[in-house]
Length: 393
Image (cartoon, helix red, strand yellow):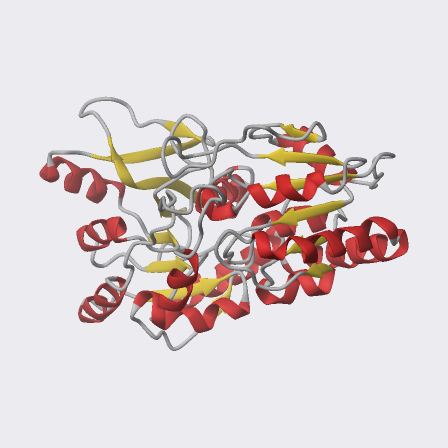
């Protein structure tokens, strides 16, 4: 399945994946944007017959002139250089056929200006129009309501509109895709641009848990960074009401100091596992009875899809694409500290833990949905459609 592009029918397609994070503990935060870069790299690196070569292009982070490019997920990373002329020449030398932008941040703009003829696919991951940014800013840490928490400010991404406008002068296609239909309506308010079409570009959920066997003792999982944005203190408070249940944190804080959440004075039934990957992550998710999400805001959370792939239903105060209400229990919106929503969380978790048939059905239905929509096969199908559209432009 070679992905042909332009007139290079017999040559390989070279794609620059533009992002500010790459899902690597040594280089920065472990977020959904970085997860997407890893999945794209693995998709093409593990299937060279597809005819696509991937190079990461960092929106942030300076490299050292003359030093070899770092390698992450078997993929070169082009870091910025303080010498702008050297940096421009380095990007030009790559001769990219296509840029895959992992969402959009203002730091990407200079890359797009440097390569004004290179087509762009913007993979919209977590668009935040003004109303979403206002909701996120309501977050407060219990006991420290006078301190504005770290990690709540979303950069102004409306400069993408200028990129799209100027690109028309160069006849450079700028196309948009997103893993969830409900995110399409957030595009104009977030980026200041209204594209004629936003395709559904699925996530690549490639974990294979096999036959699912749940733990004898009930366990529930929190899969996210332990930062204020995710409100992990709600998970801890929930644990206090279920001493007979194991509560497992999968993730670690990105922020420290004032305005960060410090996981102290935890109940005995709460475990801090830190960042977990691979077979250990699949095992914990597969054995868990419920995934609990307490975030103030989500796009289409990858944690939801990975949990459902492992037949683990959801309990959450966000309901993107109605995934939670379809494959779990949605407890309603609760802004600020979120503590006012604890009674609803308690009732929802009790229902899932007590009704084994419901839990089993929701998990199995969720797995079918993920396998049907969000797979490498479906990602490649839409990616080829993008390439065909660019080829015909």
